[in-house]
Length: 258
View (cartoon, rainbow, N blue to C red):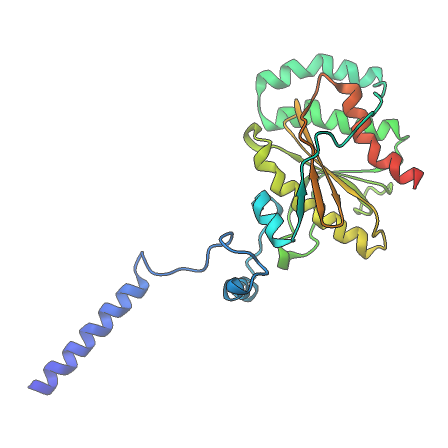
């Protein structure tokens, strides 16, 4: 009888252990963003991601995370674009903005700002360059899933006129979610890193990559050279159309001069 009691007690203990490990407070997989992918202290968690093929995406990067993961040096110059001259906008763009800007801000949705403000601005850049650049919207851009560089990009402007494949990306533009410019900086920086990797693979090692986070009315610009990420302290606004156009055109004009 004493032996039976011991066996029953052992069974009860095993059941309790199983309940603890299988209960709602059981330890789950490591948190996706609570670690640096390349730090020694987080090696186990990173290996877990690789084994289970859990990939980060551009939209899941914060600015601090992208800086840590890719060992970026952050700089905040007062202005990335000193002594830049304004560009005359086409009547087509001015008419489009005149008719739709107030409506887009009144509707106040990301879709409205995208269709009525951001897209016309970027298509004007293409028009100014005689349609000799690539324009991509909502395009899948998977460069390195193991480092989280995967997902869809809001807008990509490339230096090579190609409608079917992203080659030589020069400008990565992110539409700010909930009109929060700051929250989009990490995503934009991650996309810029991916663009830089693609350019390096194609032999374009020295090519700078530009980035922008915008609400449509508010525009914040970034520049990536090697591992230095510059974030312009100044914000630019849609009522500065001629200046905005000059900034958006600058990366392509620099490439032509090079």
